[in-house]
Length: 211
Image 1 (cartoon, one colour):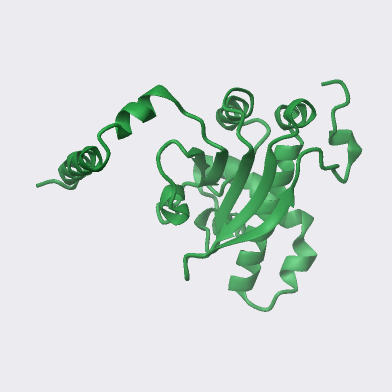
Image 2 (cartoon, rainbow, N blue to C red; image 1 turned 180 degrees about the horizontal axis):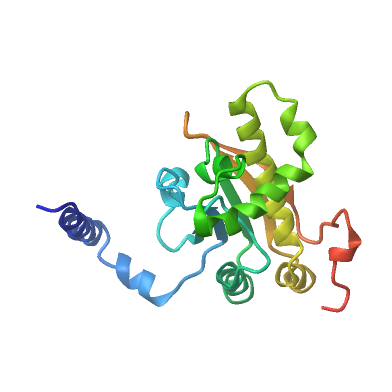
């Protein structure tokens, strides 16, 4: 049996178990989607949002990309964000990265990786903003993990800079923004940054006054 065929068998077994446990389970999912959370996470296969938070289908709206980035030119991310905020009206947006992130590690060296260089450039910029703080740390692992933390915080700030979030703050007084980091060594999520609705940014030029 091929590995992909095993996935299909496991799916059938899961669906059967769910129907036996709760006959109306799938019918409820078909009829409504009202998640409280938008999760912006890393594509790393070791960090599945539902597993590490013990949430069920329908509870978290999920977007994942390399190194959990919020890039102002990424129409995929912005489309997800707009739908989550304006249609689903999520109450919280979580940017969750993880220690030992390969994307961040790749951004810390001068090797060319092809097309992904354009994506990693955004992380290199975060490194440049905080280079003195990072370079003072004694080990490569500490420097990597500090950049991972700083990158998560920067992506939360990028969310707050969008007109999508600022408009929702003014109209609905939500969503609350969170920056979290997941530790692969112990499975624990650690909060790094919280931004309640209508938080002020360090540079007012990023705040829209005519929404």
